[in-house]
Length: 323
Image (tube, rainbow, N blue to C red; front, side, top):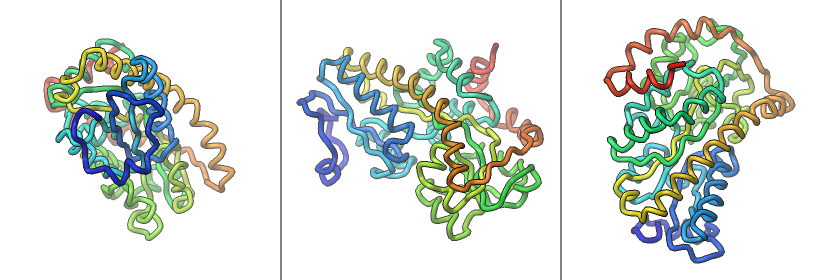
């Protein structure tokens, strides 16, 4: 942010397009997805909204594709206040905001629409804001990373086909335990290393959404895509709570409104993209399979009791799942 010393980014800033106007507040936001992927497009909309709401007094600079570090590094930089905002997978930030582990539970939401309905519930969102503040963060928005499936080098037609396969997962205990429950050999790995790991045989497959499977061209090294919907993944945009508290009230309001409005649009955009992406993957030679999800669902039932450890996690789970 312009008024607060940031990381040593001089070399990066000289290659980053600056706003045409002289904004008072320039917030640096980093994420690890490719430029113009669905998360990035949501942030682009947030930038436009923020500029409009503040009459050009505030804007954001977006650093995509992990140029400022992997997701764990982005969280640490935000905690230190050397990066203004970061967007990471829920599975990364939930290692810090532990109540958010609720949203890592497999098969919790069957559609992005169902997830959005809960995120737009004032009581649910307020609870998420409180959880973030307790952990030292300010929640700016909850975007979507899509519904997660399984990419492999050989077709997966049933749960038996995944047994003993080395499947890359995020560095998150619930993800690891879920794939162990499926009978696979979960292999936590940074996303930036996945293409090479698939290419070299370090892993046999990975879990992911159609968006990043397409955006990172992972189908080139894992041409089989099993539609499972094992996780409805959120992408959380957050800020250091102390840094946020030091902003003028009108900038605080504009940031929150812009983040939440952009997130609503982005979640619908992700939903709209799924079928066209799958059609395009088939045209690129990808084999699409549809294994029966029932055995997978049954395998992870014990995780619900094991992973909800605290009263606040149980309270958020109750809010997120009540009719």
